Length: 515
Image (cartoon, helix red, strand yellow):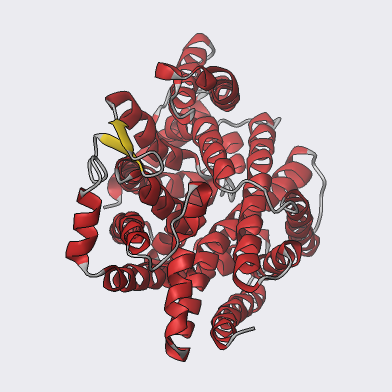
């Protein structure tokens, strides 16, 4: 192992040790399952904002966006980022406050499936059971993709066996999540967002210097027709461009719709201590998301210029997603200080992955142990036993995810896209109508959840392959179908009972009184 690799490993080891220490610290603070899964609703505004966005972005921010920009110019990643930026702001603006208040009023619901059943007085917990199954179905492979990304990073950096690297990464993530629960995941997410931010800015500044300056970077990009255009898709490999039409723009921006149904993001809204401070959280979250995505896209543009001057290898296909790793490796050759800084950058990639994996793991665990075992199947247990079961479920789900991720060719970003669509369509319209439509009932919510989830599969595997006008991201049509199903079925069935509408009216009044 070279001196630079030793420095990189040292930086990453320190980072991982801090994550585990945080888990141990919070393990002593969790007194019950509510603390383990929702942190006792005591999150501050800054932790709420940054943990929500760090758990959202994953390694897609540091690898996916730069990779797409490197290969195809800014149109595709920019419209995706615009959709996500708008979705982030609207989600914080209209959903955060109301779901925080409503989940507390709805018998102090501590998970999203809890809220669905208690919002409609679903005594049979059908909504809860189906929602829990949806979360497990999508989050286990989603978590596996995070484990796989960590394994690939270590394997490519140090030449170690992929499966060994993946398992070690999984053990660290499981370690602090199973011990510290939600509070540990949220605190580590805050730190991880800071590490991610440092990584983004160090990479873009170093990359510009190596490429010959900002003017050279822009001249190289402008030399490619449509590379910097929002209405043209450029292909570096084919040296050609094609129109980026209105339908494609709508399809790409539809990524923003997914926010309304993301359990791990909505949990942060539910956990904030003071609803009066949500405005501050919204501003912090939105500014960070916009800046970080902009810098990530520009890293792809800078990376192309670095390839052009021979500073980094020319990357093709999925290899373009390693552009930030290539830049970090180049930086590490500048001495011990530079190698340590490169370690921080690579820890940032690891942080992006871990901040999402821990949240997914916790959400899947709560669905399995709290929603299915304890509530749906009615297995009674003490608080102490419930905490043990919660931690054991984290470990069991991690083992399954690690088994799925055992193959080095495991897909990472394809799973992220599909799972994002699944949650956005199955839960997004259900969340919005539960919060804002008084007439919505249990039957409508159930119909929307099933229709949205099913349409994601139907559109992905049956409709979208036809190409042409049908080549639309599955989240958009599935989201609309789910909304339509909720409205139609709710209006065709019995109106909700007075007890349910009284709670809705009370929550509405409480939201109006909170500035």
